[in-house]
Length: 185
Image (cartoon, rainbow, N blue to C red):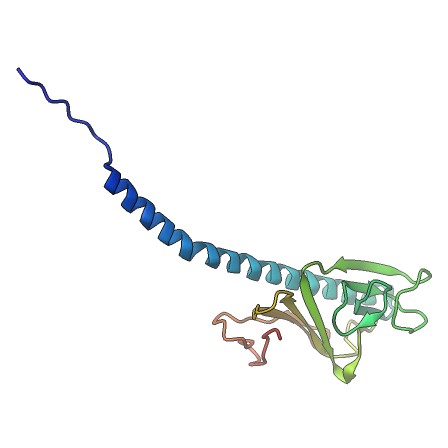
């Protein structure tokens, strides 16, 4: 009497097809995931900048003094772009740079992202009054330093002291609420 043993398993052809499908899906998914991570890093840094501006406003109110926020170079001079830190301080001598004698409230490293400051009057800084209002309206554009990256977020400051993040749900490069461009150059 012949007894046949039934073996369950996959053939080599089935395994090769499964491997081909998996590698094809991976080729599509990995670049999308990397792009997603880059966008998340920009959004997280934009949120951190927004919180810092809100903190500056709160300090101006509680300490009853003008507080300055600026993009700063390594020697603590305020600049519009290409700074390596975002600085929050009380500029007693109004020289637009932090000195050892002045109170520094926060100093955030920018790392691999690029920030660009755009303020009314062409200034290199934003100031919050003791009333909580901003002396200048403007925005801080947060972008990736990599060439070809077109995604960015703006932190928008109104003279009233209100601070909000730009929102671009449809990824057309324009703020959904105001219609202004938020594409990085």
